[in-house]
Image (tube, rainbow, N blue to C red; front, side, top):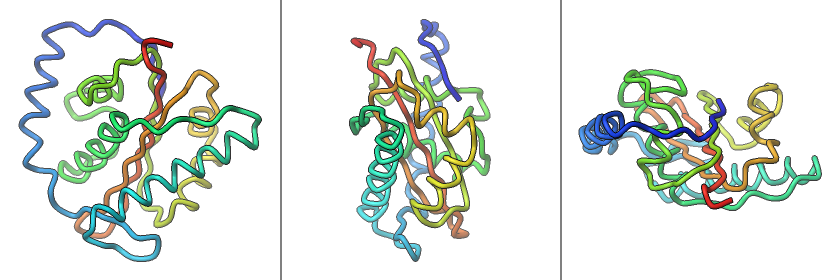
Length: 175
C-alpha cells in the first residue's frame, strides 16, 4: 500500500490518538522471534527486524538503488501494527477503524511526504518473508520504490506461533 501526503483533519487525529491510547496496554503478549524458534525476548525480535532491513537494502543494491536508512519512528509504527493485528485478530493494511499506514506513522512521530507498507504473516525467517515480498509485484514495488528513503521493520509472534512482519517505508516531509 502506498500513500501521498494529505492533511489529516484534527478530528481524525484525535480519534486516532484515543484509539492508540486504548491499545497500549494490549501490546505485551507473544513478543519475540528467533530465526528458527519462537522466543520471548524482544531483543531477538529487534535483531530479526534489522536483518529484514539489511535484506531489503541488498535487494535495492541489486536494482542499483540507494540504501534505505533505518528510522526508529517507522519501526515503532511497524511494531505496533504487528502487535495490533495479533491482539485484535485481523490482517490488513488498515485497522478495523480504517486507520492507514500513514496515520500510524504520524502517531509514531514520523513527519512524512511519502509512506508505504508491506505486511506478511506465516513466514518464519527473514529470508522467507523477503522472498515472498520480492515474488509479489506490489510488495516488490514498495521495496524498490525510488521515492522511499527510510525504513522501519516490525516482527512479532502471536500466542499461537504465527509470525507477523511489517515493513514501514517513508520519505520525511523535509525531502
